[in-house]
Picture 1 (tube, helix red, strand yellow):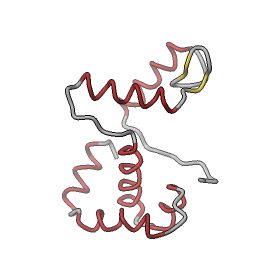
Picture 2: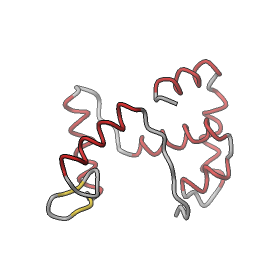
Picture 3: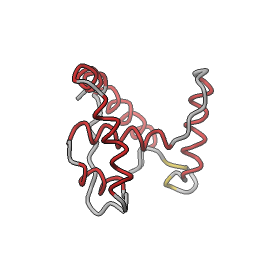
Picture 4: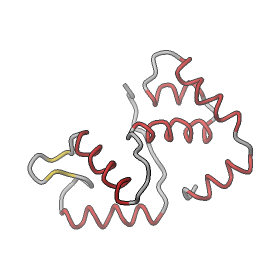
Length: 119
């Protein structure tokens, strides 16, 4: 498990949307279940799946978010051991899979991706 806080930079439109959701809920959590507080993982999965269906996109597991984080973290930091720690991988071989992918991505792709997500 990760033993330090993870910071994720969000684009201004995403931050504004999250602030609006939080203000509407009037609680400390951005996403919360009115009865139980924190959303359970199954509820997050259900919302994720409903979003894909509503957009008419093929289904994808919520696990793709984890892969996206690992890839973006490695692109940003170029630090395999830090990404390993953030991902909670016990074996560096798991994290090296992301390194192989990042090595295939050219500079133009990295720049366009960073601009797209507001970095």
